[in-house]
Image 1 (spheres, helix red, strand yellow):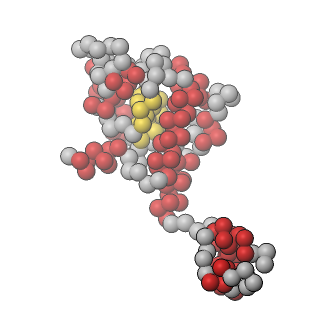
Image 2 (tube, rainbow, N blue to C red):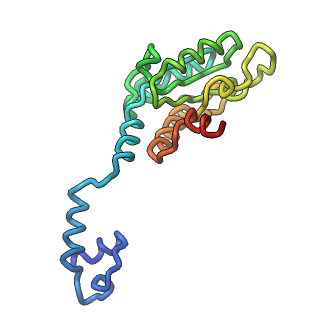
Length: 192
């Protein structure tokens, strides 16, 4: 009788469970014990979990947003608890590019070169209003959105966004990766 409530909570609806005088059958009991002892998943879910728990960021800090981005490695915000131990200085060691600040037209080619050097799968976060849309710099020298140069997965709004906002963007990216959403570069190639 002690197993009736957990089986009902799990959503197992057999006729034995629906009868209050009879307990669960042997199969239901064995199935419940097996599910509690064994973690069941698919290979795709395991790989997505591993990707989200070991993203290594490469920074492309260009303006005031970079100061807020640097704060996420401090003890107060501790990005290491999400598997992002340290910022990488080489794009070949990183799979997350955080573009923070305004991107001048002269920096477009180096940004694309760094993005192309990253190994797949790779993700991009546009941090701040300038990286997302050009911000208040609506002129010929500033790229009006980073997604004209590289495909962007997550946009973090703000001028400059607080470290908490960047952390929220990173968590949203982790959720998208675990849900099986493909990186933006794969979506861009499918659309074109």
